[in-house]
Image (cartoon, rainbow, N blue to C red; front, side, top):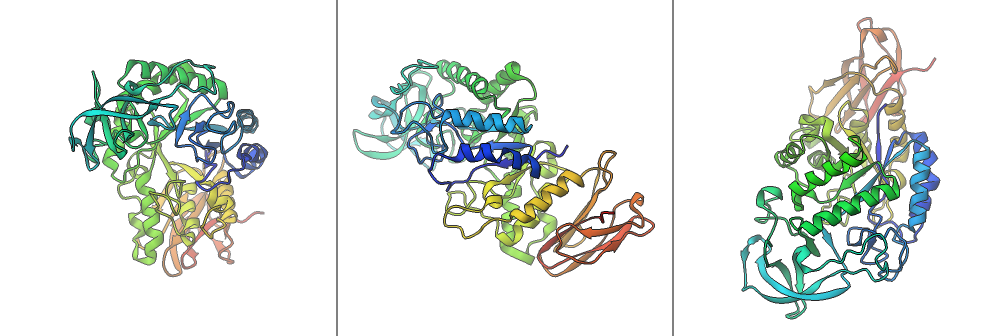
Length: 484
C-alpha cells in the first residue's frame, strides 16, 4: 500500500475550538481519498487559546483544565481530541502527534537565579557579566492541581531564558549553576555558535529530573491518546543524545513500529544525514531541501532546471527516511520560514511527491482545503484528489526517470503483481513538451489517457511498450491505461 500523510492544520485556522470535531467528521472522507495517516497540530495547553500550539505551557493538559484563561485549546477539548483519534483509527488511519519538547512558555511565577547575557549571533560569547536575574521559570500548573503529575519546573530545569524582569531587558541569558550550560556543540546545531536556545524557557535535557519526567510524560501521552507516531518539532535545538534515548525508550515500550519523523530545518543534506546516522537511520526526517527546491522552481518558472529538483535532498540519498512535503505551516506566507510554493506549480509538485517511488509524501491541509489567512488561494483540491487516486491505483512498481531536458521531465512506474497497471508522468515548467517513455512491453498496444484531463488525446503504446507522451505548458499529465 502507498502510504500518504496529511498535515491536518495550518497557521491561520480559526480559534473556534471545532478543529477536532471537523477532523472526526472528516475521517471517512480522508480514508476515501487515500490518506493513511494524519499529522495533528500540538494538542497541549499553550500560552493562550489562540496559540497554534508551539508556545507550550502544560504537556499534560490536552484541553481538560482551566488554565491560561481557557479549558479547551485552539482546536477543542481533550474529549473531542480522543473522539477524533478514535474516528481516524476506525478508518485505519494512523495519527501522528506534533510534540514540542524544546521549551516551555507562560510560567506561573518568576524566580531569581544567576545568568549570563550572551551574543545572539554567537551564544558562546558573553556580552555582559554573570548576574542575578529574575525570569519566568516556575511552572506548578495550579489549574491541574497535580493530576497526572506533581512535577513542578524550576529555573534549574532550564538552560536559558529571554528576559530579565529586574533590568527589563530582553535577550538570551544562559543560566549558570552546577552542571549548567548549553547542550554540547556536537549534540545541537552549531548555527549561532550553539543553537540550543531557540525561544521562551529552554529545557535542559542534561538534568536527571527533566529526563525522568519527560519519559514519564511521553508514555502517559501515548497511552492516553493511542497515537501511532510523533512529529518531533525543532530537533536541531535539542540534545540529540537525549532524543535518541527517548526514542529508544518509547519503542522499547510501545513497539519498534512506533513512527518518528524529526523536523531539522536546514537545507544542507549533511546535517540531516548526520542526525539520521546518530539514530541509526531508524527515524524519518522532513526533506527540507526538497521543499526549497519546489519553492525555487515555482518562483523561477522555466529558468529553473527541473533536473536539479533532487540535488542535495534526502529523497535522492536517503529516500526511505524522507518525508516529502510541498508546503507546511512554517513555510506558508507570513511565517518566519516563508518559502511558499506558487499555486501554478503545486500540481506539478504534488505529482512528483505522490507518484514517485521514493519518500513518504505529506499533503498540506491548506493546499487541499484552501488557505484561511491573507493568502488568496483556495488550494488545488481537484488535482490533489486525482493524484491521490493515481497513487492508490497506479503508482506502483519500479520507477524509470527521463531527465534529458531541463524544462520537461518524466518518469514511469511499471506496476506490480497487485497493481499491474503502472503509469507515465510528465511535467513541464516551460512550453508544451513531449517525451518518449517506456511503460513496459506488457502494456504494448494499450491505449493511454491523461488522468488529469489536461490533454484530450489518446496515446497508443507501441509493440515495445513505448510511446511519446505530451504535456501542456507549465502543467502535468498522468497517463494511464484507458478503462475498458
